[in-house]
Image (cartoon, rainbow, N blue to C red; front, side, top):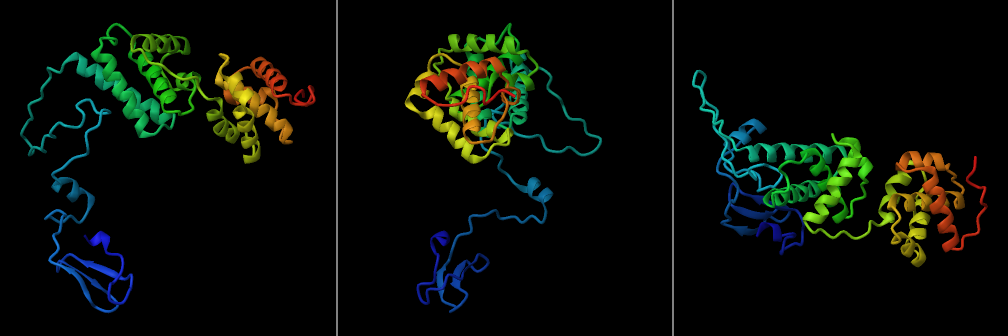
Length: 292
């Protein structure tokens, strides 16, 4: 109720004070008591520092698939000195594997600066694969890396397989193989990656202005550009070519070598995509503008 009171009904002042000690809400300007006999929904205890609060609180965080027991276990209280705690060692091997996989998901996601919802969705996908017996006999690192890439594609987060391989403990070739395996076994359908999603981040890394970024996105979003993006070309190569064209047109030239290095592709790929885009979009540009 106190959250709904924004101003004093008597004088119109917004200087409204909630006094939970006396269970009332009053106006600090005219003194009118706006509400009384309020119920304090906070804890009955007080804490004067973070350590006291952590000891006295009786609730925990919400359920999360990023924790092996989903955060539903009860923590063991601190035992007095001299008293040894019984340790249960008969943990199921599947539980150990799950714990390791979730740690790997969190490690790679943090290295790639991915949000919490990506970690959560990847953890759910791993649990689904485990239920369908797709984990046994296969490398956890490969599967987790492939799952992270799949979830990034599903959520429209621009990350490439090469970027994931850089923070993974598995080579790119094996991650790609695990990616194809999971798509087939889990019957996951992924839409073609939109090259425009990669442009803002890579333009920033190349030090290009917002005008170049918008121009590159415009090139991709043209009707013919969208058609080209669905021909089976890699989204990175298409995005790199669009950035290359936009940089030349905007007077902020970057070499094919510079763009290829930042975006993890090759100069030949950029050159081929550039020529196709120039032809399809009917762009009148100097063919030698990017040589140097």
